[in-house]
Amino acid sequence: MSRVRRFFRTYIPFSRAGIQEAVVYRANFICFLIGEIMSAFIMYFVWKAVFLSSGSETFMGFTMEDMVVYLFISFLTGYLTYSDGAFAVGEEIVDGSIAARMIRPCSFEMCFLFQELGNRLISVSMIFVPIVAGVEIYRYITCGELRFNIVYFLLYIVSLLIAYMISFYFNVCYGFMAFFFKNLWGTTLIKETLVGFLSGAVVPLVFLPSGLAAVLNFLPFASLSYTPVMIYMGMYTYPQIAMRLGLQLFWMVVMFGVSKLIWRSAVKRLAVQGG
Image (cartoon, rainbow, N blue to C red; front, side, top):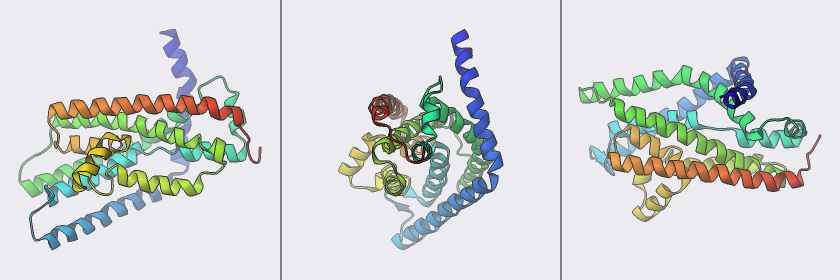
């Protein structure tokens, strides 16, 4: 028990720092949020045009109602599971502050994790309830009945938490590449675009050719967005949900292990710029 208390005593201050950062830079936070919401509405009008042009009430097994729910829950999931660990690590390598962090008697990635968790508390408090409530009100108005399922919702929360951990360690792994390449700004843009597509955040994976969809469903990127959203929508049976959650846990463990391997290799060749 004392070890657990010592652990939280060490890292809770980083969560407080994350909360303070979100509060201090609230204009940046709000502008980023507005931009993301605008992107979600743009995608809504794009898919509305697709459904109208198809001349059918369904498209690839999705109704327009399903597509609206998918778009906004996908936006919420992507926003809450987003991790800027790659950017943070890269910046610290560039300005040299990585050296000071490395000599602290605490885990390098745990510092980032707890700082991000503090930041995410602000995000959850501001957007989670309004978006979920808005989606469920839309479903009720469209269908004439309450479609909210508490079991699927709780399973979605579990999947969302695992998805965040996969995202965090994936971005930590990517951020550690700055030890080798020194600057990740350009490649980060490519990475974000690819992850957005491969995770199903742009196009539901079920819309893709069956062979490609099967491959992407197994890769870790589907666990970031597609799996939690499909669980929320009730598109999976309970055995399928158990299998998808198991796959998410598998990729979380893999990403954690890979991050440790890269870290051990990277610290041997640290060369900061500007430090």
